[in-house]
Length: 228
Ligand SMILES: [Zn+2]
Image 1 (cartoon, rainbow, N blue to C red):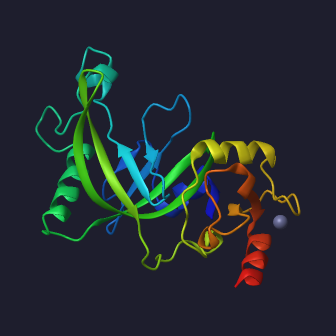
Image 2: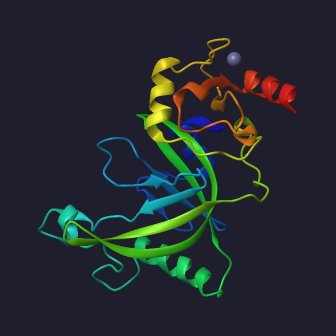
């Protein structure tokens, strides 16, 4: 299940405005990534087949640092003054983990479903980073794994009862439209979740919208009580 939240709630939880996609250590204990995989989204973020691996693309050079279209310029590791960009910071953390020099960076991942509507995709560990040549420039790719460890407390109105199983954005957008942005049982628009009709743990798929529905927190909970 992934929780649907409004942008203002993210701002409340993270205690900051998230104006960029990559936010290294915006909290003393973790980082935040905002993703978008919808058609026409600016970056090529992908969810690998098993739903537990996220491949996140780095950020472009900022417009003020180039005369060219940022999409044609190598993604920067450093600013013109020589400090690390978020690409550089995430890369350093990923490679540090890979070389056994540090614990994996903890990353909370949010994903835009439509304007103002986001989902909390779960807590990930940053395990690798590399550069990749695409269309005559290089971009950064970051590999993140959904963590199986206990999720630390979120605010009480966004309790995560089960680890998120990644549902592709295309499926989420289809389900959101089909279910009209409301709980399929009571039409509530509060505290919605993307629910697996047949649970992921019992082999239910994340990639077919037929197995995903919108449920409010109350119906989501009463369902999980029955299943357990
Ligand atoms: Zn409901």
